[in-house]
Length: 327
Image 1: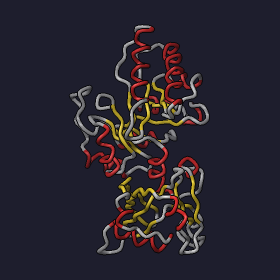
Image 2: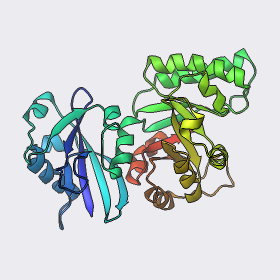
Image 3: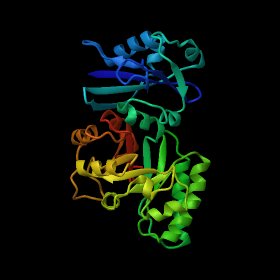
Image 4: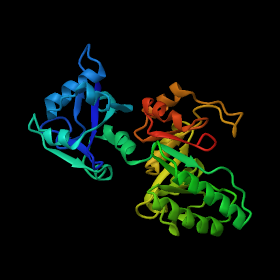
């Protein structure tokens, strides 16, 4: 079954949700307006019909210009399989005021972070993630540790990325050669810069740094995740409350491992060949998409990419992209 949905945003950045009827499949959950694509319909035509029938929204030609593809993702319930195609639609205050419940369903506007706290269909998890988290993650290059001079170089790099516009983005502070104490002090200074402009910051390396720095989350290697799993540990055991966990993965087994330790999302690489790993053959987008569609985790694409690949990653079921040299 192919389903199209609209992520309708108002001028406050809130998203429109509709509640499924109590007796319907997944009754009582909150979802994005939309519905099934009928035989012979295009995705856009189906979405226009569903929005008109459900919330009285006339998707005129002027509104259609603002209709942008967000994410395509497959999902299987025990009794059915879906392909969900999501679009974003920015609505003016006047358009929002004209919306109405045409099928007796409850409607509400919520911020993306608040949506994650509501009962929602499991198939919507990657879509909600795409709304809450950046579409691009910038990972620090290999800055060697040489005391204060190297700290200044890293902070300059952070400052430059704090000033970027365009795709929503976050930063990963990956400095494997740095001593823990120096890394923690640098992370605290970097956090001041990123919080000032609302950018999320992920730590990397020694998980003990998380206790000293109130960052957005932690980027774990697959070997760290394996060690935690073998010890019977998961995200809540190794990270402070409120931290997100991202796990680096390269195949289906590691994606399952990331899920086992309760990761919030996975990095899956390499999509394409990279200068840093010239001997590693890229998965390619088709094989990458197959792995993504087989997991319920939100997944970012990594390896040989640039920010311009974000839309391509979303078309293949991912949330966005991450990288070093192309960012």
